[in-house]
Length: 170
Figure 1 (cartoon, one colour):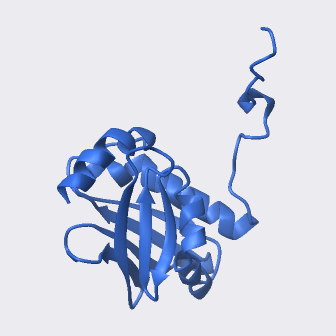
Figure 2 (cartoon, helix red, strand yellow; figure 1 turned 60 degrees about the vertical axis):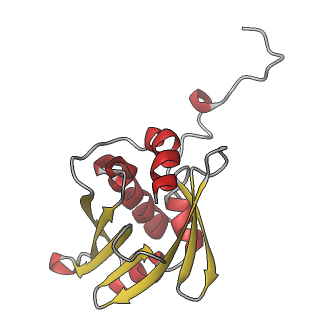
């Protein structure tokens, strides 16, 4: 766990905006889809990788076991193996070796007036900033967009986001 703290602190924390004073943070968002569909979404590692873009790449290594590559593409990539624990109205990703050490929990509830599903994400990490306030909001925002529209909002195709070729003169 000390290796996780040391390596992630330098690379991943810088990519997530937000801060917190404790190891447990939460954020809630309403997604305009039925609960079973929303719950299924979060069980797919491809979906998790998409909404955690730049923070983690996730793949299934066994039934109910995911491997998370934190800070993907950097020299300081950290691998975390989690067990997927499904409970009534929630889904938890817990450390495969120390269940209380690291945990990401999703709670599901019917939204008022049949407006879909309320999803609350809670993260207990050794580094509170890993998934704090704005970072958790971004994850839920991306997930909602992907579920409701089929795509995640991006600026990649906007002219302001294009990089100039190295040969072009300013």
